[in-house]
Length: 260
Image (tube, rainbow, N blue to C red; front, side, top):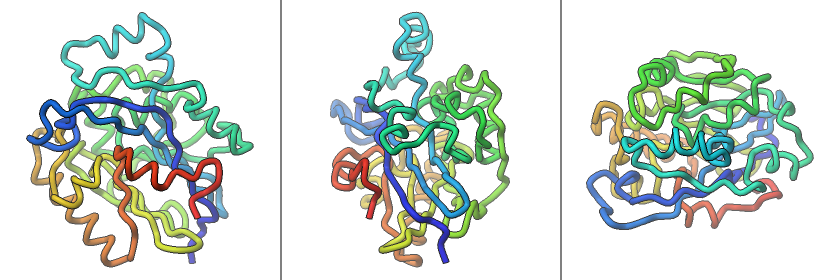
């Protein structure tokens, strides 16, 4: 029986970039609008946050913005994070404080998923061991070392595992070395399988297209993870949730009411 009581997708910003960053070798010249998302999972044992959005300070302060987003090697460009989209503001709309979050799961440690960790210095941060190693290299330009300067309380995983009844960590490497997706069994209706950046768009799933950025160009790992997610969805009856698909998100945005 699942321990999950409520579930919310949380919009934490918007990023506009060339589609090739989401669909490898496809979409040149097409600019897409992608949501930056976190997900709040309330369980009988505490509150779990999947991903933590961007560090708003690196967008608001010109010196930091230039340092991190003005890097010519950084192809993404700066996202937009409105004051109401910062995670503390989102949580406040739900009557919560950042300290009401008991743990954070980082599907991976790129800037738009781990930048907000400084808001949750009290909480354990669950991450794959291979992802920590990739961040420390760093394996690519989307890891912002300063995001981890406050010394998160890491809880390292070497494989898959269960955080609470009905909340399962799923290994889906490819986009990054230690990427993890999250299977959430809701109290009513179908489970949701949060793909993270294993699948940015519905198109990644439907056409089995690898993300534009793959760890060490291992598209084979990325495609194997997409197929794994699709297989798990068939086996569990879960709905696959791509992570940066604005059309998909808007159709399921019930905030501040929980999903279902």
